[in-house]
Length: 115
Image 1 (cartoon, helix red, strand yellow):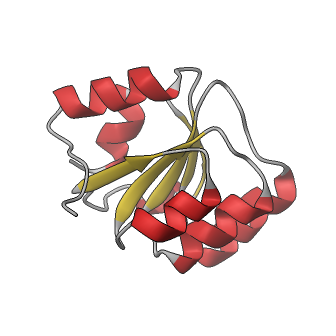
Image 2 (tube, rainbow, N blue to C red):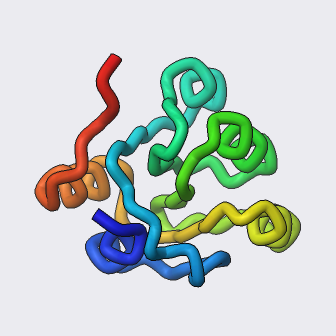
């Protein structure tokens, strides 16, 4: 599944790095705790969260996430978006909530990573 397919499936608005949406997504992780993100996520994973602060951006960069989807219509402030763009990390926002996003992406064939 490509990032642009994720955006389409989630009816997501692209916040930055639209030119990078041809990247392939193989795994997904959804949570709202930065410590869990850092503990459990492998590189090249799609991160789904409702957290919009700068800590999420830093965690996503440390774990080498493929992209971040913000749920519930939330969007980070412009500083976070600009930093993500500078770092080449695509950001998206959707009005859907975490549970629905995970279900839709699972239905499309995307899976969580193996422990």
